[in-house]
Every structure is written in structure tokens, then in C-alpha cells.
Image 1 (cartoon, rainbow, N blue to C red):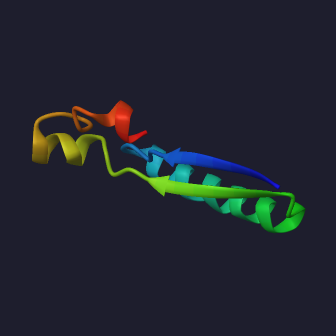
Image 2: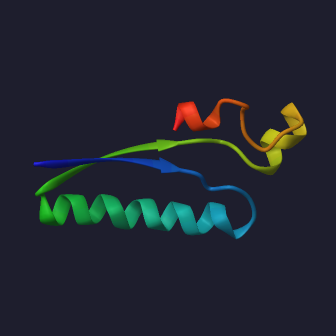
Image 3: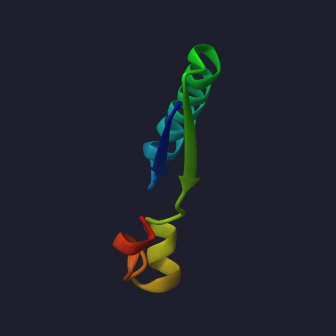
Length: 65
């Protein structure tokens, strides 16, 4: 069985809503097809992160991903 690690980055504005529906769709496909496994990890980066930390993502975001 194939496994996929997916970084979920909702961002800001409409991105949050679109990402929410996309995650539901991916999970439904996984249940329906059953021949792959998804490992979804959400990262809370974007505007709110910037306000709190002064940058949109942590300095080591590439290593995190």
C-alpha cells in the first residue's frame, strides 16, 4: 500500500475554507479507494502566525516539512 505525507497549510482568508473541504475530499477518497494511506499534518502558519512571531512560518520550516 502506498503512503503519502501531506503538509496542510490553510494560510489565511478563503484558504482556510478551501483547505477544510479539500482535506475532507482526500479523506473520503482514502476511505473509498482504500489502496493508499494519507498522513495529513496541518501547519498553522500565515497571517496569525506572523502577528505572533513576526514571520509567516518558522525559520526552519523546510526542515519541518
